[in-house]
Image (cartoon, rainbow, N blue to C red; front, side, top):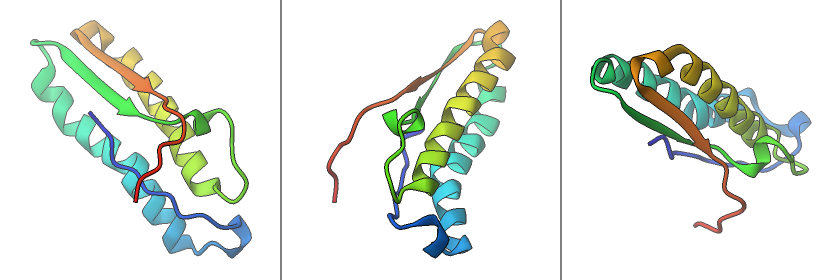
Length: 103
């Protein structure tokens, strides 16, 4: 299950590239790396990968471009992996919860 996520709010024009990069590294690259190393171990045995995306993959909020882009990317990654590895008996799905207040 890929569940890591961060959100740094602010207008895109004021966002540093390091904040953008960090958001995509945690929210999207983490899922990429998990899948890259888990899938070879799952081949032949089957299994499931669950990616936590967000409703914000479909409906954006103001001042949240990096988060929203990362969660939309998670949907694309999920679809691509499902197509690539369904024949290996590996299910890949995304869950898209709404807002959850966390510290």
